[in-house]
Amino acid sequence: MRLDPLTVILNQDFKPDKKFYFISGNEKSFMEKIKVRITEKYKKNENTKILNIESIINYVDETSLFEDKKIILIKNCKEINENNLNKFRRLGNIYLFIQENSQRIKKIKNIFLKDKDSYLIDCYELDRDSKIRILNEFIRFSGIDIIEQVYWFLVEKLDNKYAFLENSLNQILALEAKDITLSNIKKLLNIDSSGKEKIFLCLYKKNKEIISVYRDKVTTKSDVNELYYYCKSFCQLIIDCRDLEEYRKKIPIYLYKEKDFLIDIFKKYNIKKKKALLGLLSSTEKVLRKESGLSLMSGLRFLLNIKKITIS
Image (cartoon, rainbow, N blue to C red; front, top):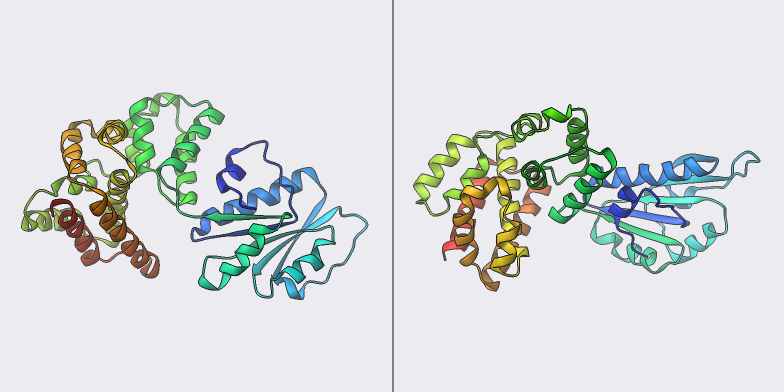
């Protein structure tokens, strides 16, 4: 059966109770966190030994009088089939398979999805709703008091990759209560308050002006990726909101001054344009994953394509 990865992380009462865990997806740091979380839960409640192996087919069980069970971490999903799972099901061990998504593992994932002794856990980059869930639990667990303006700023600006997001929250946790201000959070997370996000607000300008602003503020590959995630959050909000009223409520408070502009942008989008925008995000994500980032030219092309879709 399928298990929400955030349930593993956020539910303090989560108790792993399956024989097999297949951890997959495309976000390595999230997958690693899930692996650690599950193994820690077992180690806390039982006497366990962790073994790392390459493939399940090469594993030979060796019983010990002093261990309740072993946690077997398997790097390669080769040779996984129902017969092999049934073979290891009878042993008193726990098996964690960790494998990034690919075409060749679709059938394998389906085996775990249907198996009653298994959890399939897919780990992808965090979306807005996931970050809200994580931030809410962080505030509840830590007891930190965060004002509304800082809260919505964090929802928009925290990284989509779990490891980076967790690191940012740990840095905030180390602050004194009086230091948790919007200005300090921007400095802490290394967010330029001059705002690469402001480039998105130039969509109505002529291409020549957009290019000029872009070249002024975006000079490195890191800048391109930062701008991409700003633009992606704006675009995802447009795609996800069903109507103007929902969109209006979800505009981040720190962008209050740009509220009228953003509403005007949203009004230009119908179903057809939203599909085109989603297609642009998907194609850009593929480039980003393949090349581990966007080039300066790719970032500019992405921005101009957003403009093209918006005003067409």
